[in-house]
Image (cartoon, rainbow, N blue to C red; front, top):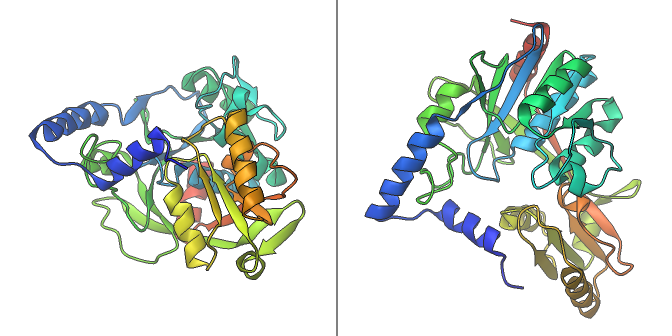
Length: 336
């Protein structure tokens, strides 16, 4: 199946481009992006904010990190709400996201976050804009974890985290069109309190003046209803992969490292809503390949249609926050 335009563009940016015109455009992008790293958002008196931004345009792990932070705070007994961004959705008003909400109303990432946080009672809110959603969140709880914002202005966040991929923290090292950095590295580092490297590799990361943490990723396999399908079972099965993310090759790489090679791979665009034709073609490919099980991510699971009677399992990732980061979260929750 041909790679969607969004995925092709993401891959090109990740690989990087060169040339005089591209360099000039990247410089202009970087100057504009640097001025927007700190978002103009007001915080109500007494409210506390943990801001979680990403270094690259997709693939940095900022939303899973935001979910992990909200989960940790809630598990420690703090009142916390995660503020989602309802990308490509129309919430219409500020609302608490329910695990059963329509993805077109609340967005795929917010819906996946609500499902992940339900077990600890942490809520997720979305709204027509960031300010309204943040205001609403801080009416519901004293701490807001803000997904997708690196820093606030004029009052800085109580804790600002920058999520990076441990294996490739700065992407191609430049802003578009020469690379996939959201803003120049120096601007990102000056905005954050801590850099959080997320991944399966252990390594050192130069973070300028910021403190660097490593959030380890652990997975026992995939969740199918109420049970875990372990890696041994997955290796012995004929599996297919369904994704609606910008960089499906990262999921494929994770599966490959576990010895799992899907016999069918369906890659739609990032946040894409599948058409009837998309699902029909996928079902037919899986039938011809005699697939036992579909695999997908928690975000992609919010949009996957019924797959012709073949069960769908969600890849189960657990992000383990290091003790220094947990202490920083607790300090932010109690106030500086």
